[in-house]
Length: 292
Length: 316
Picture 1 (cartoon, rainbow over the protein chains, first blue to last red):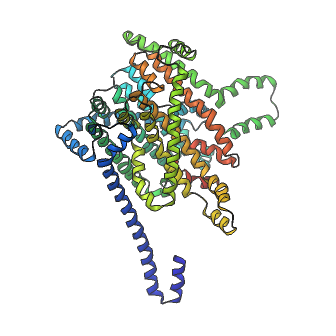
Picture 2 (picture 1 turned 90 degrees about the vertical axis):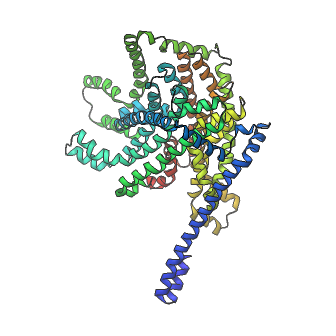
Picture 3 (picture 1 turned 60 degrees about the vertical axis):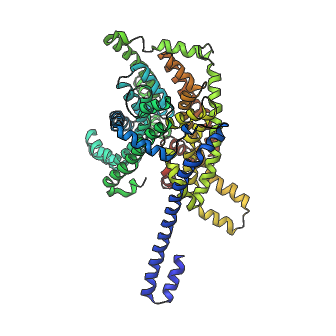
């Protein structure tokens, strides 16, 4: 399309045509953007409408018997329940409990995972930790949650260990990926000039790894909050997971949906908005790598 | 990896040999330094950590020790399960068979629906705009939420766990297939059209091979995420299956049962990886040997989304 435009530009009066060409490009972009937003908003309207009015029938059909409307509240009821719970004032405390647990557990997990990833530069340690990473990635988080819950009971150490065991490998995988892409020439040069191991790690390896660490942070967080909620279901008396379990046991679906959706949006906000904004800010200077 | 490993060894072999005594001494050192022996050392080290922490706990809190599983207890439990001498309602093989059946039905439905949706989203901008946010929302939802929700809706039934598998796995299929469609080589299609290659041949020789690595990654993700979702669903909304059984030992407060069953979970996942996915990937990617290892590794990290962009750059 643009090529035909340039042809006409050559034929006609140059300055006027140049403007139209730019205009055309802008117009096309605007048109695409409008259509994208149109479909997007339509999807929100459609999904919320189906949820409010038709989801009950769909699930009754899937189930083969009519479903009690109380078991599947619509979005309007969930929003109403949200304000009700917010009014009771229990929500900030539950959020705080869960977030503290995530911060402690995932913070440690990130440090351990990154350390193992850096150790895996050496072939020997790569062999040593290979199976640990494989097991952590492929085993369901549930098993760590149950094992730590039965051993540690309600002590805070249990969830922390479960979070570490489920998420450290995600950080390790990203770090070792970064290590595979290390600038070999720089390291060779540093080695031949006898730069010490510590200095080499601090000044070459870690700056190079920073974007990979960040990716590990984001992926790790997305798994960490889910595992944290799961640990709270089994071995806690506060937090989002605990509230979810209580409302599920009481068959109070609107409260259940409110708790999970509230924390879901909060976690998504942290993951997609806050972390990504920080990442963009810190790695503005190396666009090519952050593009991943 | 293996290539770089063997290189120093080969270089050492071609060098003029040192005297035999020196060589004898260097053999244990070489074995100790090899990554394979490190790999063997890992379970041994973990076993030592286990025993040491048992001893430490016995020393510090003697009253807590009856909760902690000892290796011999876990070993005896696993052996009993292995020869189907169990206290649970179903033996090990029946249990995993039930779970596997649920997993495979959910997996099949998720693959079919997800491929259809992924193709539609890759081909049409409007469909993509319509479905993108909801795919991402389902992707980010914890399996626990689906599991509890489905257990309340469907009760103790096969449908709850199966629906959980579908919901947990489908976004990964959609995302991967969409990436695959976006990465199909346009030039090859244009060329096929200008040489008037029939449509069926184009699909077989151009579209399918270029979608293959993405489909494979999708299947692998869907399977492993589906398995993780399934066990949680069985904990809350099942009356049999692997998840239910580990919860059974948990409720019975048998720590060795929980640890032993967890070990079966790990063995199950690794067996599946070795016996199913690795042979398939070897067969499917025989024609592009350099890609094979990459795809296998990409399947594990969560960074599938940029895999399509990385790939050409890495292989030049």
